[in-house]
Length: 447
Ligand code: GLY
Ligand code: MN
Ligand code: MN
Image 1 (tube, rainbow, N blue to C red):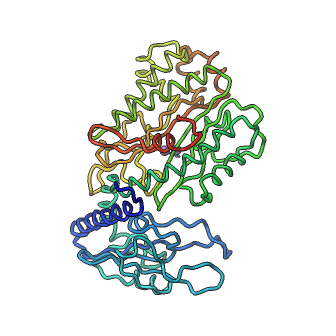
Image 2: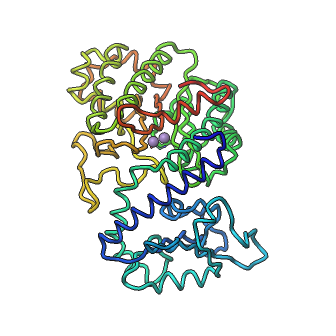
Image 3: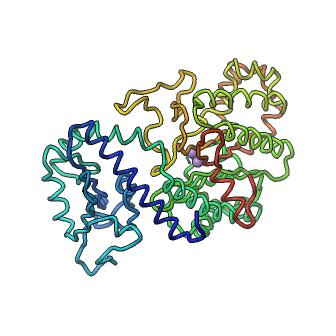
C-alpha cells in the first residue's frame, strides 16, 4: 500500500475488475454463452401508490460498479471488451439525477446514456448466447432466468473468495459500523428507548435505515433472547441490565455485520460476556485456510459446554453438556456465514460450481456455512449464549435435572449474549476486520 488511499483504491479496483472479468469469462465458457448482462433492478411501487419499496441494487451489479443510484441501469460484459454501462437517465423534474455518472470507475467502462425504457428493451431482447442476471420484471423474465441458472450458480460458488478490493470495502464498512457501535456503547445506561439507540446509530454512521445491510437489532434486557429481534421499543429502558446490538453498515455495496453485548451490574452476566469473548476470539483465530466450518462450529459447542459447566449453569461436565446436545438449547443458531455483497452471502453450502450441496449436520439445522474455509473468504464468527424461554421450557422437560435453575432464573432477564466479528481467512492467520476497526475508532468498547 502507498500513502495515497485514492491511488490504492484505483489499483485494487482495476485488479478487482480483472478478476471479476476472468470469473465471468470462465462461467460463460462453462455455459456455452458469449456475453452477460447484469440489470441493477428497478424501483417497485407499493400497491396502488406512487411510493416505492426501499431499493436494493442487484448484488452482481454492485460487484462490478459502486454506482449510488443505479435504478434501471445495466452492465453488458463480453469477454475481451471493456464492460459497457447502460446508464438509465430519467428525464423528470421530480427527482435528483446525475446526467453523466462519473467516478474512479469511469475509465474502465464504456458508457451509453439511455432512457430506462430503452435499457429494459435492450435487456429483454438479448440473444440466446447472452446470460442475464437481475432481469427487468416482465414477460421475458422467466425464460431469461431459466437460461441463467447455471451461470449464476457458477458465479455464486466463486463469490465466497473476495478480491483485495472487496476485502477493503468490507473493512471500510466495519469502520463505519464501529462509529455507530461506539456511540451506542456510550449511551447504554442513559435511560434511552431502543428507538433512540437505533436513530443514534444511523446518525453516527450517516446511513439511512435502508442503506444498512440488514435491520438493526437493538435488544434491551430480555429482548436479547430474540435472535432477530425486530421491534424498536418506544418505552424508556430504565432497568439497564443488558444490551445486545447487532448492527452493520454498508460501503460501496459491501456489508459489515457486527454484534456486541453489554452487561451492567450483574457480575455473573459480566463474567459470561468475558468467557464468551475469549471463546469467540479463539474461534476467530482458528478460522484459517482449510478449516472445515462444520468442525469449527462443533468446536464452538464444545467450548460452550465448558463455559456452561465452569459458570455453574449446568450441573454436568463440559463433555456431557456438549454430547447430550444441551449446548444447542443455549446456542441454536450457527457459528457464522459468508459475508460480502449480501449480509448472508450466497454459496455457503455449495460443494462445486454446479450447485451440489454440502448438507448441514442433522443436529445443526441453522448452520449457513458448510464449506471448508479458503484464503479470501470473509466470514462472520458469532457464537452466542441465550436464555430463550421456549428452549428453556424444552430443557426443563427433557434435561431439567442438569440445569442450575437458580442461576438461569437470575440471568434470564438479561436475554443473552452474542459477539460477532467479520474475519478474512488467510493461509495460516486471520485478519479480524472488526477488531481492527474498533481498535482504530475512538471510545469504542474493545469487545
Ligand atoms: N445480523 C444477522 C446475522 O448476524 O446473521
Ligand atoms: Mn451474522
Ligand atoms: Mn449480525
